[in-house]
Length: 424
Image (cartoon, rainbow, N blue to C red):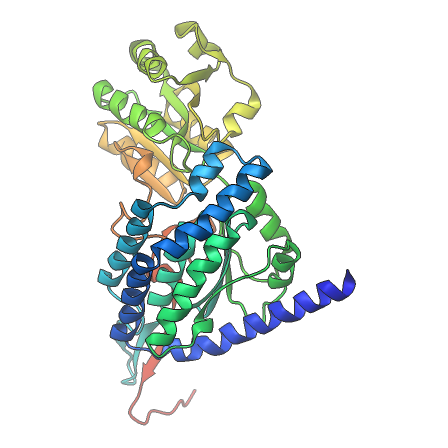
């Protein structure tokens, strides 16, 4: 066993070393060359449909034997339509502006030096994710466009699909004249491989885990490498006493019901006491009609008798389901205190026509996305105009919120001189 782990550790180390070397050629590649790689990936996905579907069938068969839930199998499943969507997603990344090499904020110093900042790739990025083959392509496309080498470690449930996708990535890189090691799919399903990867801070610059809270916390616990993450999305909407109640109903219904199993769905509704009697009964009726189970505090249940009693755990919960915690609060101060105590720094919103309170809310709530009169469901890189996102960060260093191409780069200082020397 020790020997096997030793051999695996050696293979993982060599893989990271190859990625580190490969990044050097990629970071000097021109925009047209990187776009050509993406074009070849999109073409390879379409041309390789038969092989991808065959590989995916092996994963689905294995997953069925292991007793994976239908929801998990659905996330794992590829089809001609989904493969086409993946190809179209890569094509959309081609259209995005390349941030690498951009110089901004140039200032002329008193001594004549010009000081600015240039965007450069982060280096080698490790993506750890669960059973979603589409992430393999999405993450690779964004990393390659932003000049980063990438190591892709997907869930064991998708190993055949991911390896087939890895072949398409490698073939595209080779055909474009770049090192195929620039985008690597980890071939082993052993969990120890993740532990080995997370030790390699000399070769890997950033880890982005994508998956459930348990996975992300495990990565943070083990990693020697900086981790960009968000543990969960406990998203709040506060319906202020100055809200347009019809508008509030539409927004709250959308935020909870449109797609409840995602991290930007509303999990807790906070209602200002002066409008609660007018707002909550009709809002509860709309939620019941949509199949939402309500869990409320004592004041909520006085107005909505069908609501179940909320516990302390409900205020912390990311349900990812048609379940909603509801609390009546005494004004915006109480709403903000609740968000500060139970929120996850993901997305929080206020519904109000009062400009002063709206502006105070967005100044005092420090979540990565704060909204006025809009559904939390808009907290998404594509909706924000980033074109695509590699994930959402609630880490306040480097990137905060949905991460697109620019967040996969960092700014270094560049200085232009004409012979200046320092005297003091």
